[in-house]
Length: 219
Image 1: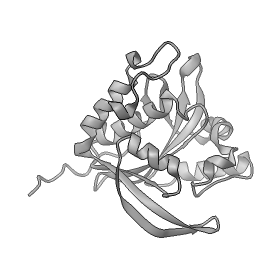
Image 2 (image 1 turned 180 degrees about the horizontal axis):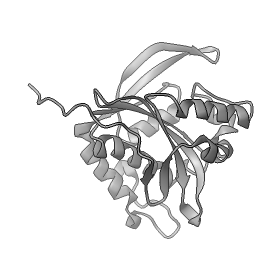
Image 3 (image 1 turned 120 degrees about the vertical axis):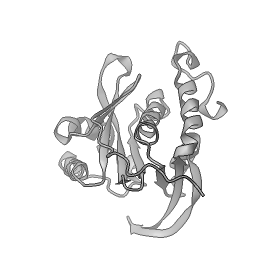
Image 4 (image 1 turned 60 degrees about the horizontal axis):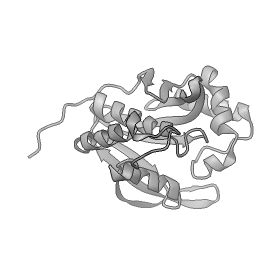
């Protein structure tokens, strides 16, 4: 019989998760909304596999962002790109279905071009997963996506999430059936995954042009 877990866990409501190339700032729609609109809100292609979008205009995007930021059981983080000496919104993380009583949560994300295939995209996942599974001691972090969203499926595997199965016809949305794949990292799986992230993110793993020397999948 397993030892009982230490429950409940604390709420996931930190204001800032600092990193080397990105910071995660808890979303303030008035402060982050314009930058997030420029980075992710106005590109319909980024929302093809994400239920809320696309958005008709900045006002519609800001209204959605404000509503989600105020919803119980969720915490939104603006991904702030610090590379090049500036600070600009580059993407969005959503912690969803936060359940401190059971120590479980789900993460979602929307990346703009500044994060796609860049160091900051991977560091952001490491920061958020480390906050949930490490600092806050949650037992399970989920990643859900449609099986036709191949980029998300590949990313889940690259980041260390284990594929657990597919729930069929979970939604009818945007004129089609949506199936949902479940991927997850458990608390006991996090320490070696965290070590992989640290090794990949180490400055010595990048050359003078910022190109990786060893891919994450090889570590």
